[in-house]
Image (cartoon, rainbow, N blue to C red; front, side, top):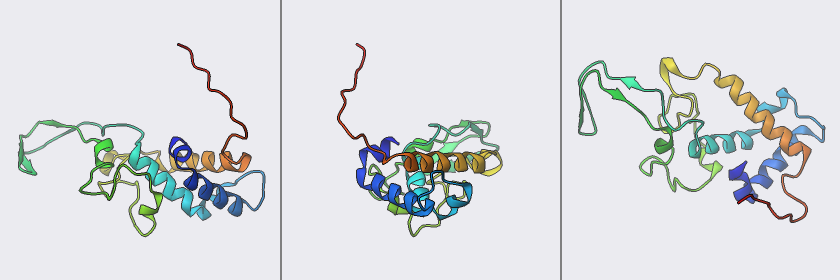
Length: 162
């Protein structure tokens, strides 16, 4: 939601899509999710910029290897950063900008087959609940936007404790 609050034009577009797909229904149903294409782009972009965890579970090299000129001996524990792969300028154009449209004509998904976007891991150790988790995220977003416009009607001061 933070990315949407910081990008009101994206929030408006998501909200309009959800309202159109829901057809004025009070509740969004699971069968509606397949029609929420822009919402899926927003979720991919959110996972790219703010993955659920900063690091992949540690891996251990089974043999001596070399990656980008670095020698990695067998039995070395290796950590992969989800956070840095999602912000790598050699992989992403303008990586610090929240732009869901970057996924529009892309076959990239979050299921671990492309290493630029691996918020749930990849291979044998990919998150087993990925489908359940993504359906839950999509429903929460969709329900949030059918319930309200996503913005506050009046300015109210934010109280903080010091």
